[in-house]
Length: 362
Image 1 (cartoon, rainbow, N blue to C red):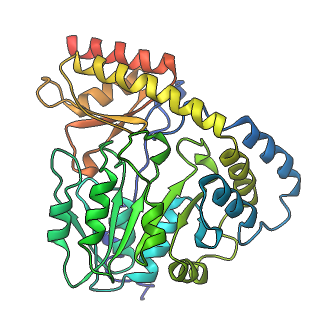
Image 2 (image 1 turned 45 degrees about the vertical axis):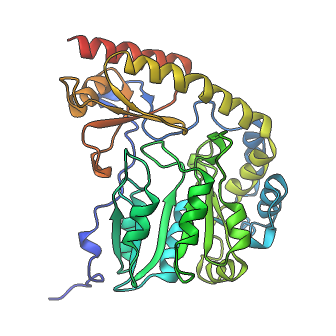
């Protein structure tokens, strides 16, 4: 008796596994595994959701017009180039569905977001990872990896899980080296945390080229991870394509109203960024003082390398989990000697410093 058979390659996909959220025995944990904001969402976003809950029997605005208008106003963008999605993950998936088929290649840096290869395999395409230099994207290596079959190049800037970034001049050089029929997708999920003079999220390139898309999310600095809301900024022709294939109500009403309130509350964003700016150097210095290698990060997380410490990342993760401190193992990203730690609250950050010091002294 036969059964339905999925498309070739589907069963070879390793499902995406998020950061741990719980420990054995129901113990209270400090979840530092998913790069969530320790400050949580804006109180204004919470208030907006509470007001909207009573209308859950109503369909959401299919075009997320109020949210699109708010994003455009706050960021100084063109509203007709914006498409909202169920997290920026959906925008990534839609782009691959629209532009990648069997035999096509999708290029990305070797430590890039796992959804790039997962969505590529789902579309029947071939993911291609280009080597990095010192855990930083290498433009020359990426350009050398482009073939006649390359359809999309994904670049997370800053990158997760390394925390490194490319200055805008390098992004411009990358775009200049690409064929016009290769789509460059700039994944700027952590853009709000970066205050470097040489950094740009990529909106300028979207407006000046027909083959550049920028994706953003409300899951990180805005603290709306549970509501799954993100957006893309596209050339008009690409926005039109994505609107044709997205679901008719792909973003829910609670997410929309929360995101509108969140993007307009830039004071809350400033507070979240200030907290991150305070703790990045403290944690970096503290871990390095223990003999651990820390990759310089501009995101809301740090990559901690245990190579050379006499301990393994797996041993450290087990020890920390036993204390209710949940960090992210990143072997799936090709970094088996590392853990990624999200910046937490003051108490959580101190707890990890103390725990790792005790672990390394054992």
